[in-house]
Length: 328
Ligand code: SF4
Image (cartoon, rainbow, N blue to C red; front, side, top):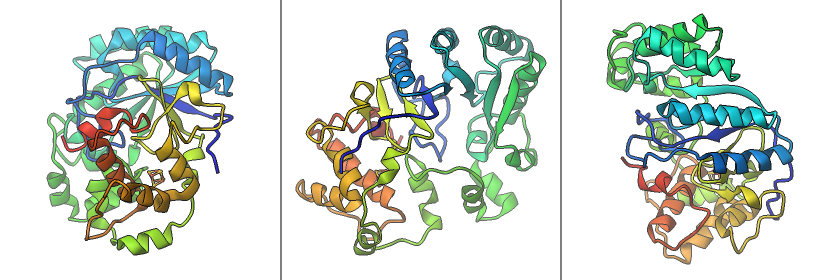
């Protein structure tokens, strides 16, 4: 079977992967270590024109932290509008908040060019890096200029407010209040995707399967790769299939069958799933972990990191920062 993306629903534009924070659940392994690269108008234009042709009428904008380059972000918002694509929301971690007045001024300018909703990250992971008073400041400023807040997630506010909002707090502080299984509670109350740093963070809360068990339980292709209901395209002109971070298809290669010669890893995953990828990796002498795996995606990520580190030049193992900065 060949992956063939003919149509897209709703998705996001990733403007940058660098971030002020290094959240332990981050799917894209974003952090301050990434190069300070931001989407250019040229790449945004290419991404938008292709996704528009594939049926997209709404997008969100995310990162990394998009507000780390405010003038560039404004330019992207204007471009989205020029395509007659509705901007659902911009995601932010609020780290850029300095004071109420300057934040109102920035957000008024965004309102004037069409921003109506801000997705504000609210979680104990973000609170390890960003004092909650900054998040509260952005929320107040947005509301005062008429921008709606999409709190992600509201449920954590009462937990976070048990601690001083003027400073950051480690997960250990949360555990000391809510108990050792607090992380496991977060996993069941948040939309955690098994990729990026979440793989390591949530591994202790899952039963591990031996390699044989894992392969036996996942005999089919990864049809997740054809999911177009919440897709992302990024600053490097990559389309990220499904939510499988670290895999990439060039946007210009959408709307035609994926060429297995150009994309051997995506192709084998779609056709034969993790069993196919494992066989593929065996030809490069990949050795699995003896302790086992909690999900097929953990093994998939481990194999992909192994292949990336061998420097074999697989175009589809991108962006490179996903593999370079995963442990930083
Ligand atoms: S195993 Fe790999 S390709 Fe399959 S769903 Fe998980 S991350 Fe995606």
